[in-house]
Length: 140
Image (cartoon, rainbow, N blue to C red; front, side):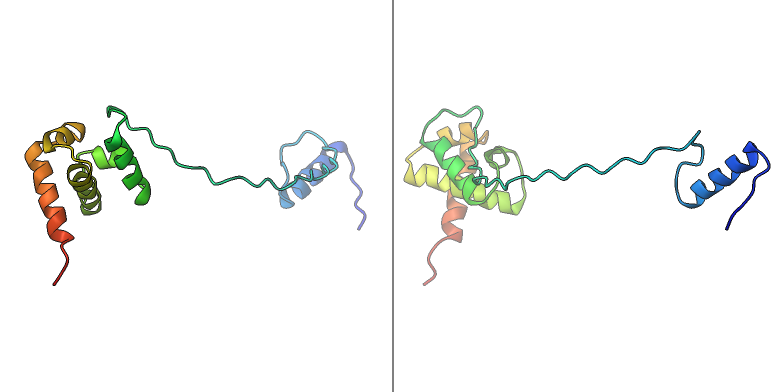
């Protein structure tokens, strides 16, 4: 299909119409040379080790309690900060109760010490210990 154009404007209008139909740039001032695609780079697979999550607990002394808090947080795959926040969601409360119970009963810290570290009253800590014991008591 050969078309004859009388002047440059007709040729340019036809060229722009074809470019527009094909999805190219309609306002292009002239032909754009085609680029050769670049050769794909061959990349050797890199085997990465799984990163070990190491939490830093701000505001706590580096003692057995901070280690307990970090280990329980890793056990449940949450951050220690979320355990220490004033959060009332049931799943966080149960995790916090486990931390409190282990700190008081197994590590021997007082309710006042644990309460200071978690920014809670000592009576709240005693209540958490009671609730943890109640929920985890062996059924006879």
